[in-house]
Image (tube, rainbow, N blue to C red; front, side, top):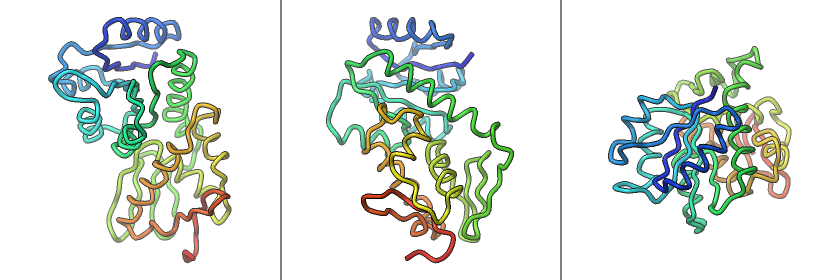
Length: 230
């Protein structure tokens, strides 16, 4: 049974989401002290976090940043805020998805299922955990990339994107294919979400002087180069 930490201060909404997720055999935990979310996160050890932006004392961005400092657990923002910068900020801080209120519960459940399946199943389904790419060691199990310039740690989403591109190295992977790989059903994904994830991945790889080896092919998709970047 997967454990979900639902960080939501609207008690009515919390109970409704908890009840719906419980019907799918998820163990849902709430927050008693919104001033110390990290303490409760550490106690619960959730497999996934669902968090609102507007919360008492500190907003969801604050807690997302602190959770990311401790863990790569998948995070979904659930918020009534609809400004594009809110979605961009959540992705930049390491969130895996953003669902705007009001929402359909079928969409929430589909996203939860897809993320949990992707994050916790793909490592066990693939026997190859270590891959060499452009002189760097890519560790799928540890979500790290290392070369002579150092080592970086990727989020689950970033590593999954990199894995797909490496497995298709020197070949263009369309945005539609990537979204299909990531979320199983592209209807639940925005182009902006994918763009932010790829840009964040390229920025991190830049620390290892590998950022230019992930290229954007306008109108086509993305490509991981094995030789010299163009």
